[in-house]
Each structure stands twice: as C-alpha cells, then as structure tokens.
Amino acid sequence: MNHREIEANGISLHFVEEGQGPAVIFCHGFPAIWSSWKAQMEGVARAGFMAIALDMRGYGGSSAPVEAEAYTPYQTVGDLVAILDAAGVATASVVGHDFGASIAWNAAMMRPDRFTAVCGMSVPFRQPGGPSFLDKLRAAGKNQFYWFDMMRPESDQAWADAAVSVPGMMYWTSGEAPEASRWNPFDPSRGLLRPAPVVLRTIDSTYINDAVAAFTRTGFHGALNYYRAIDPFTRNWAAFAGAKIRQPSMFLAGTLDGLNVEAQPSPEPMRSNLTDLRSFILLDGVGHWPQLEAPDATNAALLAFLRSL
Image 1 (cartoon, rainbow, N blue to C red):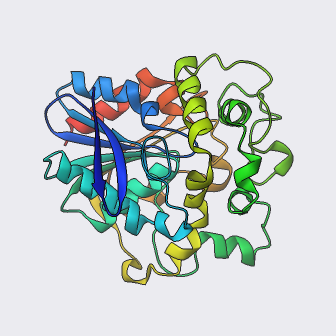
Image 2 (image 1 turned 120 degrees about the vertical axis):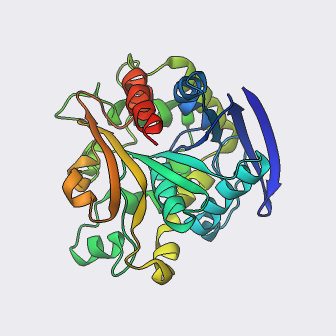
C-alpha cells in the first residue's frame, strides 16, 4: 500500500493506493478512517483493480477545517476529484459507507464524467429537491432522530473519549448487539454513546485500535461537522433538484443495521432514482459495518458488481 499526501482545495488530504487496473475509490463514514476499507482494497487489488482509500477531510491524516460549511458534498466531492487527478486516474468507480455513501452518491450525481459506477453501503441515495430529510423530520416532530444530537456543539466533548466512544458505537450498531438493546436511530435510550459491554468478536481488533488512536489524536469536531453541514447543503441544492443517477449502481447493507428502521431499503423504490441499479444485497445477520463484520461476503458482492461493468 502506497501512502500519499496532497494539497488540494485549501487542505491536506491523505490517501492510500494499492494495485493496478481500473480505479475504485473508497469513502468511509462516521466514525471511521481509511483502513476500514483495508480488506476491500486488498480484494479488489488482487482482482486486477487499483484501490484508493482516503481519510475524508476531518479525519485521520487529512486536514479538519473548523467551519461546518466546509463539509458539504460540494467540498467533499471536490476532494475525490482532486485525488483522482493526483493519482492520474480519469475515471473511477466510487464506493462509500455511511456518510461516505452519501458522498459517493453525490459524486456520481454531480460528476458522472469522473465517477462511472457507484456502490453505496448502508445509506441509500436521497434525491435532492423539495424539503430536506431533516426538514421533514422537524415537520413531523421527530426531533429524537440521532442526527440532531450529532449536530450539537456539545457532541465534540460527548464523543471525545475515543477509547470508549469508538468501540461502543461499533458494538451497538453491529449485528452482535442484542436485538432489544441494539442501536435505534429514533430512541436515545438505545443510542450510540454507550460503552461496549464486551469486546467485539466480528470486527478486527487491530482496526478498532487504529481508529481509537486516530480519534484520540484528532478529536471528533471535523467528523461531526458532516452532520452540521447537512442543512447548509440542502439549502443550496436546487441545481440538482430531481437529479437521477444513471450510471451502474449497487446498494449493500446488513439486515440488522439500525438505519433500516428509517430507510427501509427496497430495490424497486430505489430504481426510480437509480436507473441502472444492478445489485441490491442485504447480508443476513450483519449490522451497520458490512465491510468489517462480513468482509468476505462484502468483497464477493462488490467484485461481482465491478466485474459486470
């Protein structure tokens, strides 16, 4: 794996390359770092692709601007374009998980000339236009949804002890957590900031230790700014109202992902906005982290999609 650092868009970006062939760029979500994709990078590199994974702005070895407005898809998609340019890559398939899935969908929507296929994990595509998802929740009085808590200034400190918050969040959102107490995005009593009662068995401890070390060093302000940037983005998304993603696309999630409570993913509704949805997969017994909880199954599904292109 070749580590690189570039200056682009007024910040520093850290990314990692492995393999040669058609490019695949991986975008992580919250609270993760580039190495959450290590198993997928190794898998696609062995299969004849060039894998690229970055620390998204606000995370790990990349810069963390202070202002929330620096974290909308206008900036984050620009970061992906800059990395493709630095890697000498004209086009790539883009893969994202959690908030990284939102960025991947938006990259495909905004720059179909550079991102020619897209795979989103755990988070479906939300078509721009009209009242935003958050505005709909506000209108319905559903202010307990976890995004509202993540946006609060106090959340930086609430998450600050990474040795507790990172393993705890990963445990309660994983398929290992008991059904009665597993994370529910609408129920604060089943929230993210609970210490893990046991050590996770299904997620590699080396990765968790690396993530804890990274967040202990950087803190969480930049990572939480992605939630604070939702309203600034949706207030300025009129140019993309009604946009569809026409490139080949794939959606993958775990059947035990708490986000399914809200998203209720199903292939037929997705096809109205993803006009070339080629793969829709739900992994049984897997929670919010398919790439970490079930790396082999995730790799098999992803490679089948990439080889179909």
